[in-house]
Image (tube, rainbow, N blue to C red):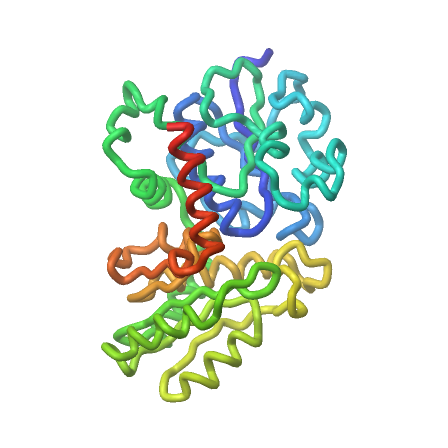
Length: 333
């Protein structure tokens, strides 16, 4: 056993997923007095399997470690001798691709730290997730952390972003330049995911139309992974400025991340962050809560609740997913 304890945070899936997992990992590390190491050296945003996290973000007021010790005191134990591997590599060492296809929590929970527990004795804990699990930590909000009991999960996550996370200056500069040069008095931010996961495009158009009735000259900032969606917006809203950042688009039906055709994976991550943060700086936000991309944009933003529209509330699939998430959270808390 070593004298210090560590939390090794691995990256998994897209930018929204890993962003959310990082936030409550920061809180968990504070609750357990562990040094945090963020390892995003997986194949999603790294061109050469180097750790790209420092190229995206800076952490503040968080006890960090640049490297982790060589030890067999690791939880979950399947990660022993595999600390340099990605989540996908470890999962595929034990599970079949078919079993992993639907991101079954019963399967992947075996390969990550249980956030409901803070009493692990192991030197190194491995954490990764598709979503935030702040609700699992609430039972541990005592002592110096008791003040968190009165805050909502969303408020806690916003607080973590504000106090502990910032973009690298070069990425921040691109966002600021775009806002200064292109954003107008009223900007409608719209996130439409329409490749591997599709939602009704008409829902987004309906809500844009309603806002335009009040603010007909609004700029529409569109963050999407599908050029067909961009074409639809440009064709429909000919009287409005449409702002879309330059990015690489995958073939129709293919995911924007974890795509072997992507010419520059790191740049793909930068583009994702630019879109997320630009969405957060709009006056209105139209998004689908079942996609973490829009959820993160909302967390970063100061957009009034009345100006945020979650389209998942208006579709059967979205309602089912939201209900499952609500039941899971209430069962734990």
